[in-house]
Length: 353
Ligand code: NAD
Ligand code: TYD
Image (cartoon, rainbow, N blue to C red; front, side, top):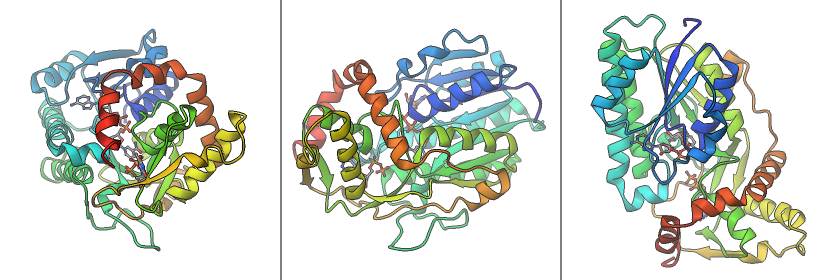
C-alpha cells in the first residue's frame, strides 16, 4: 500500500461510515478522503459536521449507482482505494421494499467494482477495494456454534441476500479480473449516530418519550453486539494490514438475547433519568414477530484478533452507557431525524403489529 492515498468512502454520512471517516481523516492527514453519499433517510450530514473544515476531506452528494458520477470522481480525485459502506441496511425495510436493497446493495456495488476495474486498468499495485459487509450473510445459528470466515452463506432476508450477493460480486471481480479486494463481515453495531429504526436507538428514544418498547416475538433472539468505534478500528486495521483477497469476521464476543439486552438498557436508563426502578421495563410490549426472523448471530473473530492484533476495547455496559449519554445529550439530533418521514415509517411499521 502506498503512503499517500486517495480514498473513495461510500455511505459515510450514515452510522458506521461517519465513525470510520472521523477516525481515518484525523489519523491519516496525508490521505485524501472523498465521501460519496446520496443522503437517504439514513444519511445525515450532521453526523460528520466536524469534518467539513478538514483539508483532506470532500463530500459529494450522489448515488453509487450513477456510473457517470462515479467515473468522474475516480478521474478527478485519482482514486486509489475504495472503502464501500453505502447500503440500505435495515432488515424490516428490506421486507417491505426489497427492490431498493437490490438497487443499492447489488447494482450499486457492481457499478463501483466496474468503475474501479476500468479506471485502474489492470494496474493494481497499491489499489484496494474494501467491501464492508455483515454477519447476516451466514444465516441463522442454533443455540451453539459461531460464524467463521469459512461458514457457508445462507442469507435469509432480502437485506442479507442483497449483501451476500454483493460479497459474491466482489470475490468474482477478484477472481476474474484480479481486482484487489478485502471483505469484512461484522456483527450488530451500536453507538452514537445510529438511526432510530434499529433496536438500541429506537428503544432509547421510546424510553425517553415513555412510549412502548415493541419486542418482536418472544424476545429470545440473540445478537452479538459491537461498539461502533471498535468496528471502525477493525476496518482501519484490515484496510492497512489485511491480506488481499481475504475475508475477516468482526465481532464483539458479546452475545445477548434481545430481552436481556432490553432489561439492561431499561435499568441503566432508569438510573440516568432518575426514574423509579422498573419504570422503563414496564413499557415492554410483545408485538408480532418479524417474518423469517433469524434466531441467533455470533461471530468468531479469532482470525482478525490473531492476525491483526485487534480486540474490542469497550465492554458492553460501558458502551451502552456511553451510547445512552450521547442520545440524551443530542436530543436535537434525534428530534431532527424523527420529524417528517420517520413518523410515517413508525406508524406503518408498528401500528399494525
Ligand atoms: P446506515 O443505513 O446508517 O447508512 C448507510 C449510508 O449509505 C447512508 O448515509 C445512506 O445515505 C448511504 N446510501 C444508501 N444508499 C446509497 C446510494 N445508493 N448511494 C450512495 N449512498 C447511499 O448503515 P450503517 O449501519 O452505517 O451500515 C454501513 C455498512 O455496514 C452497510 O454496508 C451495512 O450493510 C454494514 N453493516 C452494518 C452493521 C450494523 O449493525 N449497522 C453491521 C455489519 C455491517
Ligand atoms: P435490528 O437492530 O433491526 O438489527 P438486525 O435485525 O440487523 O439484527 O434488530 C436487532 C434485534 O432486535 C432483532 O432480533 C430484531 C429485534 N427488534 C425488536 O424486537 N423490536 C424492534 O422494534 C426492532 C427494530 C428490532
